[in-house]
Image 1 (cartoon, rainbow, N blue to C red):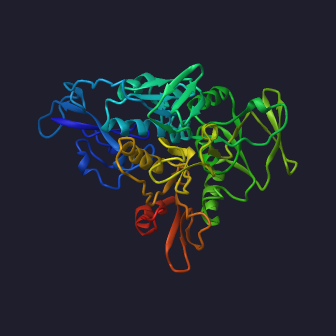
Image 2 (cartoon, rainbow, N blue to C red):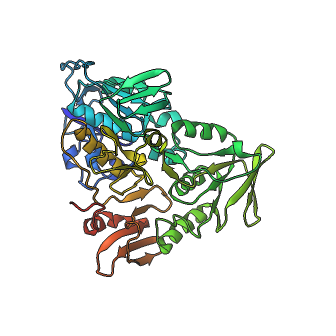
Image 3 (spheres, rainbow, N blue to C red):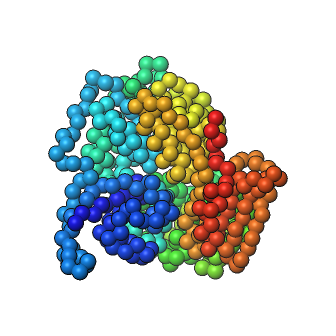
Length: 473
């Protein structure tokens, strides 16, 4: 009997029909089409549409409907007899700058339709394929940094039939001549995609202990951070937004002592109404997290093998290390180099076209038709559309309702923020740590919602009622 094996395109989680997922009530032998449509990846939370078949398991079955042998032979989903297409180097290549989720997802979408045009990918890091959202859950899942990587750059180069150049920095882009430079090398391109992501916002700190302040923006950063924590116990986190809250949740459950400094009066203050913020805060406090609201860290000095942080309100905190998690902003370095139109991010239309011909942008660096979204769902939608556009097809993104699942497992959160500057009010129902909040206009339209605890089960129902981010034009 044959069973399909499917892989989550975001985090690499494997669903094997032969094994099912008994922990979530899906017994062994459950076919993919029989998995409930509202089932979510247990690791990263995306839906079934973001899984792809990667292999077929042939299992020797059985007497009395039970699997008698566990011998599994895996075969590629693409027939092995199909020859690898020959790359036509007479064509100008498609060049993608960036090998994060945006870059690799786009490359996969492009290769679904074009196996012959040269594909060059440039990255400033080691090019490993990993899911960035999974980094902030690695401690509690007992995963080392190397275990977060699903593939090496060499693996991805083979899969995509791409020339992937690691530790490569683009120094010049000429949009008129359609060339770019990496050091002394000049690369011609037919179409260029900027998938350069976002940069960590730096905290304005003084003191002699700044070498013990860490920011995590990629797997290499996380490796440095994890290595620095060997034998350490107490961590100071700057920021109680999405990133800071996920790390606080992850590390407090892994035996660390956590203190958090946040200038706003609440946790996740830019995303949640007060009652929902309080539910998350209380859950983390009960686990041992200590908060300092309404102030900032001004100075970090060395203190023995650790640090001494001085806050604006005069409080002094002793810790072993500092994690700065005050947010991210689009990396506009290449856009400015190329003189592309920018605002908060690189401005694109709904086809991901920038202000320069044959140059596109997607992911955390792109502001798509006025929308700047640092989340996985819009990234995947953009990759699907741009994969078609790069193959000379007409396509546009249409962002629907895209709830964000915040990985504070002590108090799960799902939020679909209302549009910026939207007029309306939060209507909130509270039942202990279970908060259901709807953002409703004076006309009664639902523009967003925030859910905590057991109320997160209402996500699909509220998503169906909520106005999409992009209205068809």
